[in-house]
Every structure is written in C-alpha cells, then in structure tokens.
Image (cartoon, rainbow, N blue to C red; front, side, top):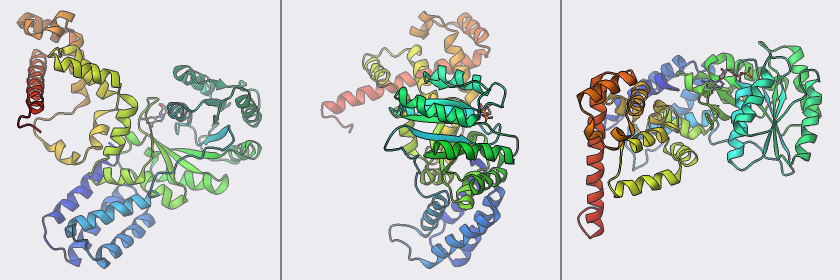
Amino acid sequence: MVFESLADKLQQTFKKLRGRGKLSEGDVADALKEVRLALLEADVNFKVVKDLIAKIKERAIGQEVLESLTPAQHVIKIVNEELANLMGGTQSRIVIASKPPTVVMLVGLQGAGKTTTAGKLANHLKRQGKRPLLVAGDIYRPAAIKQLQVLGEQLDIPVFTLGDKERPVDIAKKAVEQALSMARDIIIIDTAGRLHINEELMQELKSIKQTVRPHEILLVVDAMTGQDAVTVAEAFNNDLGIDGIILTKLDGDARGGAALSVKAVTGKPIKFAGMGEKLDALEPFHPDRMASRILGMGDVLSLIEKAESNLSLEKAQELQKKLRKEEFTLNDFLDQIEQVRKLGPLDQILGMLPGMGKIKQLQGMDFDEKEIKHIIAIIRSMTAKERRDPSIINGSRRKRIALGSGTRVQDVNRLLKQFSEAKKMMKRLQEMQKSGKKGGGFK
Ligand code: GDP
C-alpha cells in the first residue's frame, strides 16, 4: 500500500501522545523528532522535511488548543493540515477550455507510464461525459502506437495516428483539426519519451507546445523512483514548463517520497495518481484526503466516489430483493465479492477506511488478496445445483471442489461455514428490520 511504512510510523507516534492528558513542549518536540525521521525514511526531500517540521512546531506550540480537542488531537490536526498543504492543499483539476477542443499534452520519460496514462485519462474523461480523442505522438518507442490503438479499442475511444514517419509536431497539429471535424471535445496527446532528459526531446516537446498551445501540459512520472521523479519534474518544469503532474505507480510505492515532495519542490500540483495497471486505476489526487489516509483517518469520500462509479445500482437492488425473499445463494455471494473487487485491490480499499491500522491487527481477519481468489475459485468449481443449495455438498463433493479449485478441503469447509453464517446474519437483520417497521425496538 502507498505510504505504508510512513503511515505505520506516524500512527505509532501519535498513539503514544494519545495516552496523555496534557502535552509538554518536550512531548511535542519528541513526537516531531519521530515525525521528521519517518518523513526522511519515506524519502521525502530533506529541505521539504525541515520546512514542514518548523511549520508544525510553530503552530503546535504557539496556538491555543481548541476546546473540543485533546492536546494530542490538536497536534494530529495540525500535522494533517500541514501534510495536505505540502501536497497542494486541495484538489487541482485540469483546465477545460471554454472553446473545445481542450488540448492535453502528456510528457515524460520512457517507462513512466505515459501511454497507459493516456488511456486511463481518456477513460476517466469519457466517464464524465466528455468525448476524448487519443493522439499517437510517440513515434520512436517501438509498439507505442499499437499500444495506444489497443487501449483505444478497449475503451471505444478513437485514436488519431499518422504512423511513425511524420513529425510529432505535424501529428499534433493535424490531430487538433481532426478533433474539430469529429466533434471531439478533448484531445490527449501521447508524446515520445526518452530514457533520460536530453536536448532533442525538449526541442521536440517545445515545438509541439508552440504549435498546438496545449491547455494542459501534464508530466507523467513514476512514483517508485522517489526523489529521481522530483528531479525529473524540476527539469521538465524549468525547461518546458508544465501545468501539473500525474504520479503513476503509486500503488507500488510504499514510501511516498515523490508524492510528498514534488509540489513543494516544483510548485506544480499532482493532478492525478495512477494506482494500478488497469484502465480504471487513475484517481484524481486529493491532497487533503491523502493526508488523512497517511494518518490512518481514512478516506471515506474517495471510497464512496469509487463505489458510485463502479457498482451497479441494478445489482444492488436485485440483491436486496433476494435477501428479502431469502433466496441468497452462493452465486450471489460470488457476485457480491466480484462487485467489491471492482473497486480495486483490497488493501487499497481498506486503506481508505478509518482505523485501518487497527483492523489489520485484528486476529483471524485475513484480507489477503490470495484468499479472495481462493474463495472465487472454490465457488466456481461448484455445480449450479451446489451453488443454489450448499446443503447437498457432502464429503466427496467437498473433495472434488477442493481438487477443482486447487485448494484444500479445509478451505472449502471454511467457505461453506462463512457463507452459512453470513446468511444467518442477513436473516437476523431482515427480521430486525421487519419488526422495526412494525414499531419494534430496532431503530
Ligand atoms: P511509457 O513508456 O511512459 O508510455 O510507459 P507505459 O505506458 O508503456 O507504461 C510502462 C509500464 O508501467 C507498463 O507496464 C504499465 O502497465 C505500467 N504502469 C503504468 N501506470 C501504472 C500504475 O499506475 N501502476 C502500476 N502498477 N503500473 C503502471
């Protein structure tokens, strides 16, 4: 999970403070020393850490504590606000031109995730009702054009290409004309990267910038490269000028140094974060919510947004009906698991829930992705009849199912037990609701 070790350390530090009624200056100084170390270990830029700690110290020691907060809560609130400020405060959206098409140009080094991000961004905008056009401007990396075409096909979004013989600047220019004639309102230009920043790359990007005058130049950088990503961002910003940053592979970045320093160092905000290889794994970047996630306070707002854009209302209603009629079967159980999985890897989802640190420590709770895959495999190895009526699953059937799903009989037993308990619980809930309607005790 992103920021995992930083989150663990900060949460431990604040746990120590929570036990105290009163905090002395010394207590706060000790806690801030630990915060400083945790940030440095998370690979946050040295100067950024120094400034941040100074700000937090000034506020934590200088201010009156709000009456509604304990001193520890007060310090946590300040750290939360300052972490959010560090990353830009609130969300920075992309600019949409008053007269279409809006031109977005993606730049960055090879392997940063530019082409994938072009697809993800187009998908994100399409879901918001826009009509994007993808433009294949990376004529150097073998297969980059094909890669974009495949993405376009998957997303049902047109891709403009002139092959690899025309100059990128001409491709970009013609793409804008094409967008107008196709009534596409936003164009996303995938440009060529290089392994390192060089003069040729910058010249090419500058000439595209001068010719098509993009509304947004977004730099795609790989979060996993830590401070190198920050250096790359600084160079692109100084040389070409950028409007914002898309930080990719944040899902694999346990430290989070780039995410925390890049805005402070370059002055340019992170606008989106890539959270996985799939085409829906791009999230608008909310500094305030990210700060809450780091401090274990959860990010329920993002979770709700994710659910709204991924879950089907129809399915939810159908499920309710089944529950009412007590027809909930293993098929529905499978359906439900798959719906939740659409939201993304489980550890990412759990990271959005407040108190995740505590949940992880609960004994017997295993939120392993592998375990979920087992459950799905087990249910898929059952016959339709077995899924409808698990009571017929005797010893020999259990053996067959375990063999078919590559699991053990114990795993099959555990799943059946879990399912029967879930069903019992649902029945109880239904009864409580019914009696509640009749004016009973359950409210
Ligand atoms: P480009 O050279 O900049 O166009 O890079 P690509 O778009 O080809 O991406 C390079 C690799 O990074 C591919 O394997 C992508 O699947 C992967 N990638 C891109 N974004 C993300 C992300 O947010 N998370 C993860 N885990 N992988 C990503």
